[in-house]
Length: 194
Image (cartoon, rainbow, N blue to C red; front, side, top):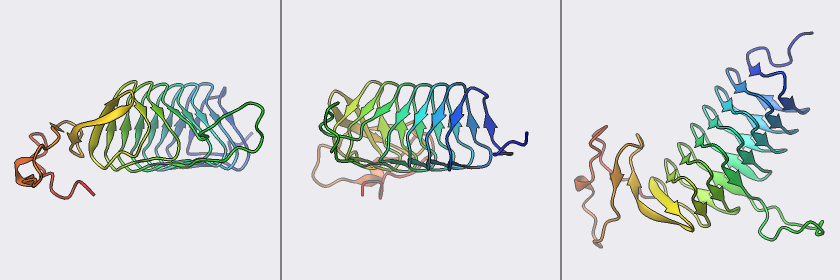
């Protein structure tokens, strides 16, 4: 039998429903499930037991670790990292008996990193290159390059695109961005905050 996705690695125990788009170079591992109408970009990794709900859109170069749940209404940009057991929600008021629930969408922009066991409340945007700490509960929008952690997650600093330098929250009203130079890649923070 000819494989439906010839330039994609799909483990035999993975479940891929109808009308799924999978980009070239993507790997889907043990017991992962991708529901109908989902889109996975090129060179993605979908870990063991990951769940991608119907209609979810995932960009290129995304790494989704083991047991991550990405529900309907979530859009994930390019080069995003989702640590093990990250969970997204899609309903503010879930009830087993309420069939008239309202979908609440979530946007994860390019370059975001989310640590293991983080929970992302629906209806928010995680800005470009932001970093979410392990076990965080994110209940509001996260600005680009912000480092957040805790329950509820709060801004604790800023990170460079390279992710290796943490900047403290400026205490001054006027920020001299020239003082915020990444020691790793030597980029200046100016223009990060949108």
